[in-house]
Amino acid sequence: MAVVSEAIFDPGNEAHPDWAALQDELAARAVRFGCAHTREIRMRLAKAGVRPEDVGGVDGLAAIPVLEKDDLPGLQSERPPFGGMLARRAEALKRIYRSPGPINDPEGDRGDFWRVAPAAWAAGFRAGDVVLNSFSYHLTPGGLMLDAGLRALGCTVIPGGVGNSAAQVEIARAAGATGYAGTPQFLLALLERDRETGRGALFRRALVTGAPLPPALRARLQDEFGVDVRQSYGTADAGTLGYECEAKDGWHVAPEIVIEVLVPGGDRPAPEGEAGQVVVTSPNEVYPLVRFGTGDLSAWNREPCACGRTSHRLAGFLGRVGEGVKVRGMFVHPRELAGALAGDPKVARYQAVVTEDAGGGDVFTVRVEAAPGCRLGDDEVGALGARIREAVKVRPVVEAVGAGEIAPDAEVVVDGRGGRTLT
Image 1 (cartoon, rainbow, N blue to C red):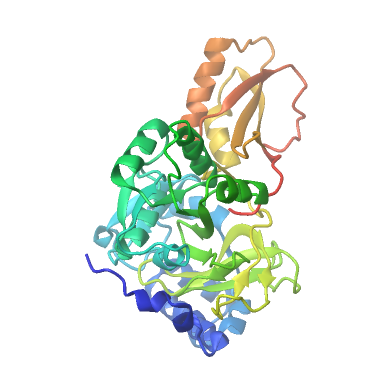
Image 2 (image 1 turned 180 degrees about the vertical axis):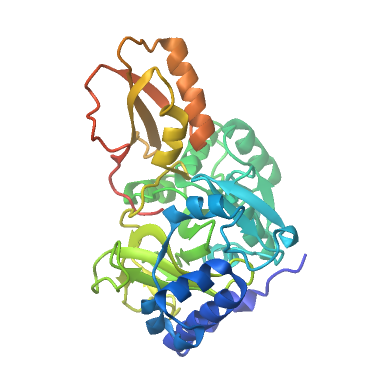
């Protein structure tokens, strides 16, 4: 395995002399390459009356409609497996994943396909570090996304996956793990379990993503357990989009992509300082994207960064535009709940509510109202819970409620959490 050169992640080398020119070049290249190699981009440009040569930079993207992430399941259903968005033959891919949505995600054959290494470097990881990676290695790409970036830096990775915290603490201790990658909530769970052993600090540094990092949780991880915590932000479709440096003051835009912050539901830039949808353009050689709407809301942080990097920064996670809500690192969509519950003759209405427990962890509750003449006992509730977990990949608490407690026009998924700072 070739280890990525440390020099390319040095802040001095990331201080590009003309960030705007770099973004213009990436935008034009993404449009030309995407139009030449993918049906989806070619058709979208044709419908808008845009020729590839018309787009000379970021400003030229304004004439191209945004492709929303929530549109991917429909596109992929019409033209499986990738909706006409793949620039290579599917047989040439390294792996194919299945994310909640459902959305199929490709992985090309190059190392660190999702560009996680710069985020891991900015978080303090170096060659020789032993890192526990607690993201899933099954079907969804999260585990291997982090794994590839860490390995590119020369780290040794423990593929912990999801759950079984006792075993993960034991192997982290036995292997002398210095770092952690995963959600901040699971990091806290591991640290609390390990504290019972009285053996001192378990990790020195952590790269967290996939779930919120409220200020109180960050302070506790750092002050109480001595872990230096940095955030990374990305999606399975577009790879790493932003990451924190040592200043911990916003997310630096990752290499090889263009980010626009657009008015939610529109194609024009959000007013300076206001929240807008994070929209990505990428000349990726396998899965190029042109104006791909992530569904996440953020804003620009224009202040110079103390670390010396000149890349633009996002202010953090400010909410969602699309239907999906992220729970324990996985997106939950109304359509997936409908697939699990809408056809059940015993179910009249249902509603998912996401809240936080005292430790900042996600609590996923699905309220279910029985159809007239039906009863939802313990067996029925247990069966519904298993079906929901299979559909959305998150274990729910299923609560049977009385008739009329869920309004006919109630939202299907309600996010009742406060202090959202990371998607």
